[in-house]
Image (cartoon, rainbow, N blue to C red; front, side, top):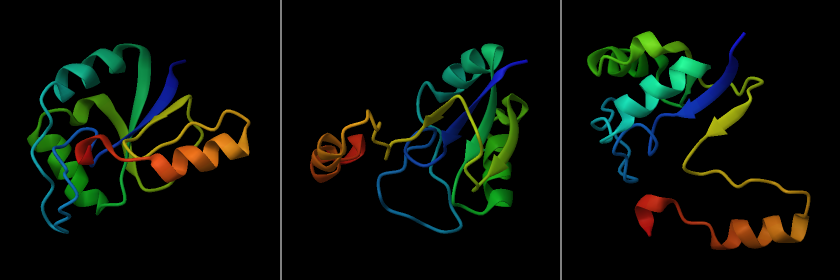
Length: 110
């Protein structure tokens, strides 16, 4: 049985840059197809997005990577790893986490 990895859409798989358009998902990020294909060999993949799930599913199909994903959801489910451009890893120290939150910038804003 493969472990599950949840992957965020905006800023991870697409070229999102903070300019949110409700009915248009940006183009696929360079290297994303190959990344997904490699991951899918060892892990079960679930797309995690707050976007409309039908729109996200169509985006996956248009980019020919839908076959690598078990599901599309906005619900955080138990997973081995979460891949997201807005994440901070909690390592047991609340003060360190507060500092990380204050200085955090998504990579596409640096």
